[in-house]
Length: 425
Ligand code: GDP
Ligand code: IMO
Ligand code: MG
Image 1 (cartoon, rainbow, N blue to C red):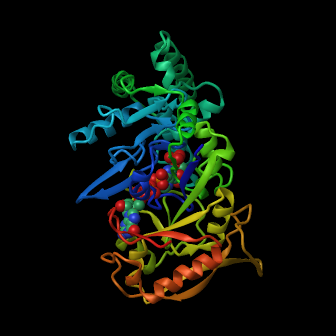
Image 2: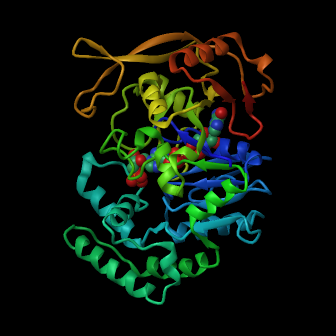
Image 3: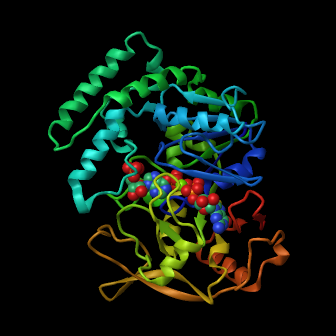
């Protein structure tokens, strides 16, 4: 029997998961998204084309790979339909080719979930989470509150009544906010999209994935967001509403923990965050602006500018521990090409003491990062195709990180294209 490899983000999301899943997908029979929803934006580039996927797993461009949207994902039918319509217009039809299936137990994002997200954020004012406003939090709340509507419900005769019952509840909650809304147009689109998603095969993801393993087939679980946005272990309450860590792959697909194989942890050679919340190594100066400009650090889903800073090793060590990472993948090294000196946060200082973990109350207690200077490589990495071309200073940075993090770096990414990926080990 084979095991499920897991690939997930170790920072605050947008590490480059989509690109690497696409690169690795030829080695797998099944790619399975296990949590999150269309708050994700996973970018893939190849043959001069660029695609951003929100709900659909990043394995769809590989002819032989099956793709599953697992039970742990929350699905907005309108967005899923739009994603598939756009793909079809670009000549890709995973549904027509039988390359995409949906978990019956995945929960649906209703238009009113989005309204609740927006009403809540509006009320929070300056203290808002900075949600993507895709309705993620309210949908997971209805899931754990046992009110939710699932993909499998769409084929039941009383689907409409179930929908109306939940919407009524949402309207009652919305009446407590000073929030104006118009539901009619969204609702019409929602029901059109529901009809469409009925045409995608519905499966029990637990049986589906375990069936693949029994047949000795290879499965890769694709994470969304990142470890520091995990609802339990992230910078709460500035987090998303799912478990973004390896454990989330077990509950989000229906696989036992002993079925987890390799865990690929992805990180940027620096660090970014979009939305509110603590970010100890954030740079508010010109250097931060340079990282944003060179790295095109603007959200794939919302277009918002991403906050930028240096790599945070205590945070990465924490993420590695939580996820049981067996191999690291370093992304966007090319963004640092122009720097004479780069920096890595090795630990924090707080109250005159040295600490190497994020304090519980990281919102009011702001740990001061202690930075180590590292010589830059001042070389254009974007065209390199072999490890022999890696400049000595970058090799030194890689060695330094491997020593600090105690996990080998297996892949190095030097540009957004599929081809700009080097295998180090
Ligand atoms: P994801 O959410 O983890 O899949 O990441 P996003 O797609 O949101 O953000 C990563 C961004 O960086 C996308 O615009 C990618 O095209 C781009 N990208 C990925 N790898 C590299 C790289 O090695 N270098 C550069 N310059 N860009 C990259
Ligand atoms: P990918 O998969 C980066 C952030 C939002 C906000 C917080 C909560 O592309 O890496 P939510 O909409 O979940 O209620 O927002 O989480 N966030 C992400 N940041 N990448 C993502 O996904 C994100 N998904 C959510 O900006 O701070
Ligand atoms: Mg993203």
